[in-house]
Image 1 (tube, rainbow, N blue to C red):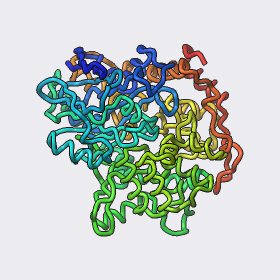
Image 2: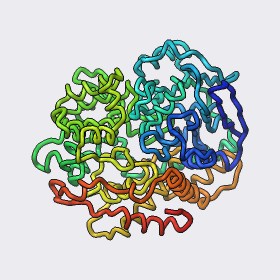
Image 3: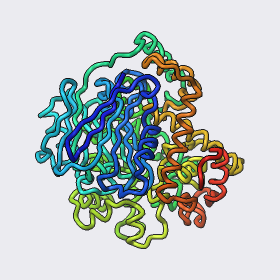
Image 4: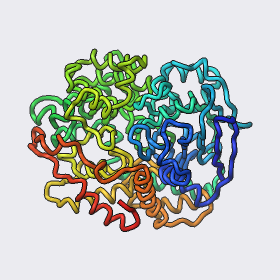
Length: 574
């Protein structure tokens, strides 16, 4: 049995209900979509008090089930105007599970800035946030741990979220208490700021009671064994997500200088310094960690701790999306430069994808030169101060593109495209087009899929299947990097849920969770006023051949939506 908690911020009132069995597994992204529809918030102001902010942990939260302690955060997105689920690793969902909390929702708006305290013993309380206001995340976390101790996990609204900048995510503690794991996308941090919640502090505890501990531990062991047998997982462990940069650069699909090129260096032209191989070797030689777990029990360990030439930590983690959008997309070539900017972004609590795309568009407008790290640092300083220029930039890529009248603005549904050029990596492009989440690769990424000899209909089917798989992972608190093992072992996952919570789900239940999530999200966006036109790729992808492949986009929103709705089969009205 676990609890779901409703917190009325205006009245400082806490209500809780017990849930058990199958309902505990109806979590994460699925639960968020269902709750947002039930509360009828599709038409409301996303920065108004009527927008709920939902935190949900999966059925294995609190255990050491590998890659199964992710936290989902959801609301109506103030960036896209549609539905948003953003998730993160770290220790927050683990702590929720340890306290037998399946989820909680923040309703309304606090009259004053507060810290919400969730202790292992005693009631939830509300404390004055004045001592923490205006602080960067690292100083804020330090002060909170000084007061509440190290055996706590944090969810933070950074300084950009305080003034409701749409770049803001929600920052969570990693296993060493760095506030550097972000539920980053869609402006969820600005919703936390609109509610005047500066931080949520939850106690760490111990593994929660389970229906059949012995059977759960056996499932954990078997899942971990299967992960260990996967060649793809081994590559993540040794090279991390940065290895994707080597792949996309080789394919000519890496965002370079505001998506104007797809490649930095060709094979044989010298080392690609922002590639995973180079970063691994450099970081290892300096004494950094090349394999690091972002959450309890994870066997993938795709994170890292990146250090400078003196062995001093620059940032943790340095990962592909940041390398692609804040690095090559802005003309940077040195991983040390990206790492230093990445640390500032983490301190501000902002989405590095949206940030990198925004600065790339600003450079395209002639406001700065590609590769100018001082210009980028100045942008971050303005965003952190919240001055006039900073607030403009904090509204994101689409807003900055409109302001400067830039033709090449890489967004879908007003959210920046992830680091996969859809002219080459077409399955991921389709996922970013049709998802209700905005241009988010995590809903269905397949970068290595060979697209050239496939029809659009075949590519849509590949995207559809991956979107179901990713929706399952996001709804069960699982990391999508274990997706292949999860996909091939649904009975194992179902058995683990049953052993943990005394229910009788089967693989069909798990697949239905994924399908229903996509349907609910599409229904929400339809109610919010979205149409097929909102799925369109920006025009420049169709008009500008991408160096070095010479490809232009062949992805048409009407055609893709037709095939996608056929696969969804039937009850979505578009």
